[in-house]
Image (cartoon, rainbow, N blue to C red; front, top):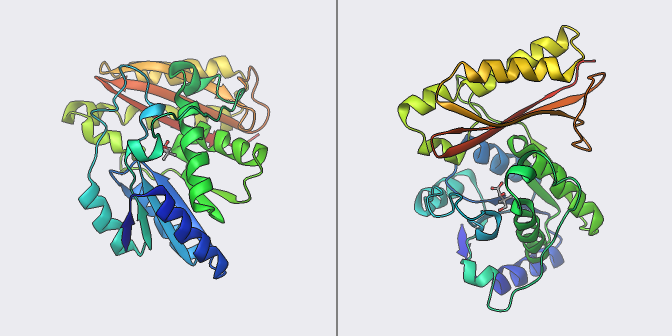
Length: 282
Ligand code: PAF
């Protein structure tokens, strides 16, 4: 596996791979790999001739006071893991290479980004779509792989790809969970042992919602009250939001009469975690 840090070099390499008729799968990441990343890389290897993984902790998707500086980083460990999985090329650019002096062009998906994490993290998705659009332009992948844990991100990136005529398939894979249900996240490594134990309440609260909806509860307010109540049994958890929304438009739902996305974010100390469950029972 070769590691490339220069955008022009990766672009030239991908152009020539395309000319040779190879299919390219891209897994965009911020590194500090866990089993969620592994599942994306494995799937990409199964479906494409060439797999490119990017590792870039994208400064413009972090707001002021957020955890850019303390975001987990483990480049040597990530390289070893990717190589073992069979990844062909690693793209690990510097911030200077991606945002050189004079950079001033951003990609903004205007509506899908207003609620959920977009409301708590203004500018976050603008940073995500800008870097993902740049990665799509550099790598020109046939397929790009994202995790369902970042559900809103996957919907936003799909919209961007359609709106900007990016000619590729967006593949979204299920959230990988720890044995106690906690969604795998690079940020989990920043939890203290007490916070880590407490954080399993998030998935329990989503399971409560699932049970209620499957039992026929159609009031989103009732379901969300139960989600809140469950999370609040954990004194270490501070809720950022809990929401029930349409899985495609991400608009809040009052009544549940079909598929519903239950999404939430909560803090454990300084660490903000997100999770969601797509409930399809009607
Ligand atoms: O999900 C992530 O790790 C990031 O948001 C992404 C898609 C790599 C863009 O920086």
